[in-house]
Amino acid sequence: MAKKLKKLRLILGDQLNHQHSWYKEEQDDIIYVLMEMRQETDYTVHHIQKVVGFFLAMRNFAEYLKKREHEIIYYHINDEENQQDLAENLKQLIKKKDIEKFEYQLPDEYRLDEQLKEICDSLSIESEAYDTQHFLTKRDDLEKFYKGKKHMTMEYFYRDMRKKYDIMMATKKDPEGGKWNFDKSNRKKWTGKPEIPHERGFRKDVSGLVKEIEEAGIKTMGNIDEKSFNWPTSREDGFSVLNYFCKNLLVHFGDFQDALHTEQAYLFHSRLSFCMNSKMLSPKEVIESVVGYYYEHKDEIDISQVEGFVRQILGWREYMRGIYWLKMPGYRRSNKLDNQNELPPFYWDGNTKMNCLHHSITQSLDNAYAHHIQRLMITGNYALLTQCHPDEVDAWYLGIYIDAIEWVEITNTRGMSQFADGGIVATKPYVSSGSYINKMSNYCKSCHYKVSKKTEEDACPFNSLYWNFLDDKKEFFKNNQRMNMMMSLLEKKDAKEIAKIKERAAQIIKNPSDF
Image (tube, rainbow, N blue to C red; front, side):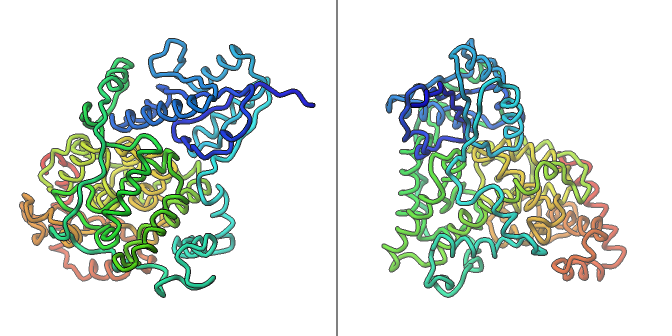
């Protein structure tokens, strides 16, 4: 009988998968290690709620494993033996514990993937990498799916995933409801009705953990209610949020998933992204729960509400991860529009007279959360129209949101939001004037600026910025068929109007704090 090797297994902070096959094996001579490290808190400035959320979820996961009699080593942020560096900590433990084999789950961030390969190459013991057993696709599935195709259109990948996993299918080839996509039904403006139930929140006292983070000297952004932390940080919490979503929010989710409102941070959104991106819940069990609930309540819930939710997880989430592994590491340097400006100071304090930006940024600073339209069509739209460098935009998005991990953040930021990849993810840039914001929200009603005005002192800055952006980038977009209509409208504007637009836009870009 072969001798069992003494193993050290690494669990990263976004690998809290309770269902992983590791934990079903006989556990003799296996030590698991989780580490809170400055290496991970300091590569960008993170929101205080993000740091708290990950540390608390990691601690809860370690306790879960301990209760099941797994041997755990846990490095708290201020532990004396914690070297604050992954390589140093691992080498120290391997020596101290006489480890004969090192094992880890494949990271979802390129930098950690490279670092772990380097660490394994430097070790004198055997090492092995395992799948995280979380995603519905492998790293290279997207590359295989689009091989030989001219465009990587997400819709076709999504349809294939529906068929592959038999999700909401009438037959093997035909979708339920006769349509694959109900996106046109998912664009309603919320005006106060129907009533939005309060989110399934929590009231966790995290003041001790906040003190530890402060004592460690970690620089953070944003705000936190230390006595009433509101995010799910365990698998049990995650299922509570998921069940609450199904019972209370799903019925109107699709209708209002793109809506924006000054008094509603969450609307009918699920708040499940942190649970999934830390792997406390899997996409499969989330989709199965939501679709299962829909089948039991078809008389109350329309298919358009459910399809919009499924598309985000089964389609968009898996697609973005595939793009990440297909296009990294070059993707993180992409800046096809050659944007060079700095992100305005109000992204860190919300101090702007533009109501949409004030609300979206203040909400992000208060809750470490904004939904996809706030991220795409408010903060992202403004950053693109003011031609900010995508490095700056990346760092902000990666830091401020509790669910932001590079594989999902950078593809959404550089690809979807900033068009920095030149059209890999999106076929046209997601830019708009103030009219779209007015259509989808109540932000414009109480704004200092007038959405109906174009270049006057009290005109909505988005209006001049939009046309200025199209004019500045017209060479880049001249062969983009999806931009033809807007570019032809630009051409019809006379020289005097263009001059006024560009003068106003230049003021806004040069002096963002005045607006």
